[in-house]
Amino acid sequence: MAQSAAASKLDAEQAGFYRRLHRQMSLIRRFEERTGESYALGKIGGFCHLYIGQEAVAVGALAALRDDDYVMGSYRDHGHALARGMTPREVMAELYGKVTGCSRGKGGSMHLFSVEHQYLGGHGIVGGQIPLITGAAFAIKYREEDKVALGLFGEAAVNNGAFHEALNMAAVWKLPAIFVAENNRYGMGTAIKRASAVYDVATRACSYDMDQEMVDGMDVLAMYDATSRAVERARVKQLPTLIEARTYRFMGHSMSDPIHGHYRSKDEIEEQKQRDPVHSFQAQLLEEGIMTQDDVKQMEREIQAELDDAVAFADESADPDPYELYTDIYAD
Image (cartoon, rainbow, N blue to C red; front, side):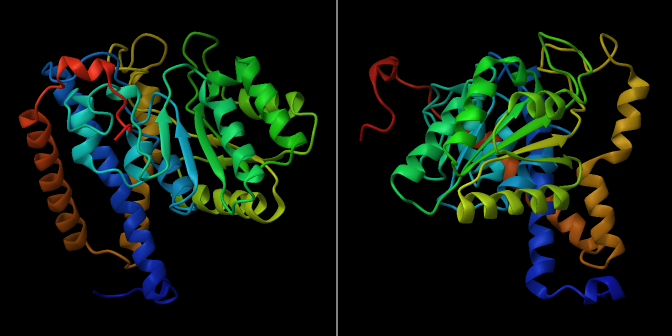
């Protein structure tokens, strides 16, 4: 592969890392597109919230963690689960409500879970995971473990008292917690267009020692760098961090919400797509010679095959037995 002057400054390991970040974002993008198609066909029921546009937040943030660190997410959790290392097969099967899903078909879209990957759930209650992040960080400190706990949530969660209480407790107790607010600009059920709310509200609410960073959530490397700093503070100094990731969702709040025409215009969405995190990072890698057009085409073919397999696997898997209502998926 021809290398540009910029690419030659990167060692092979760094270039490989960048390619992996791009592949993860691309996988999430294509997975969510297939999810939307399956939902429209009636294969997926219930609530379904797509992550299209926000891929750089999860991929960049979770790349800074170790495999034994704890992660929790919100109900917009497909991207979180895939970025954490869960397979498209087990995630898609869960969306289909099949017994081969990561939660044996009991959780569906909003409740993906994997002990193996230390992904302790998507959470359907707005902000419900925030105190749990603090609790996991407390457990880490109590056990004197060398881990961190990271949680992702939407900006509307800052209206909950639990947000303020949990962050203050993490700061007072000096816990290895990282709180990532994915500010996609449209907090449903409260005020709309609250782009500056998270950082401003958190600054006023957190009266103790809490490191805070505002990050471009459309830039995967910016997310990785900011989270890496937060991880070091948590692991070395036992100090929590609040990261506000300024991002944007290209789809509606959920599959029942129109993409545009209700509270935002088509022109606004098209303008935001000029900052598409997947396309922007791909353009950067091509310009720097880290990838070629042939590399991109090969990657897309591999992802397509992986998702074809995941959809077929989900479609062909069995429904849970009714008795599963009474079982604990981790009892055995």
